[in-house]
View 1 (spheres, rainbow, N blue to C red):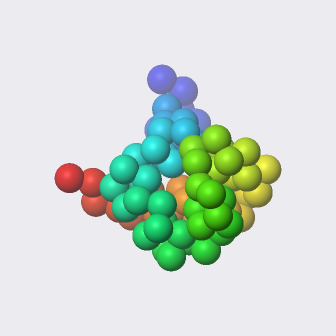
View 2 (view 1 turned 45 degrees about the horizontal axis):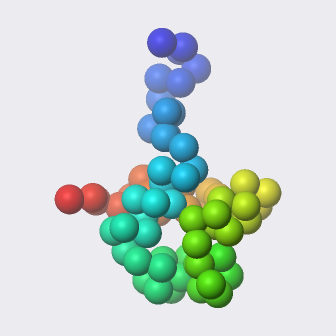
Length: 73
């Protein structure tokens, strides 16, 4: 294992996996209230969210932070 990834809790988790898991856990409506970005509120989909989050670092950071703070059952 690379030593540069030891302290990275998102290592091996794709952005698509993150969005899918958050959507399953919260649903689009609640995600849109928690993180106010249009890809979660206006015709939300995994693909539109991926497209937006891949080119918008501040929004991706918010999504990754929510993922890390969420307690999945």
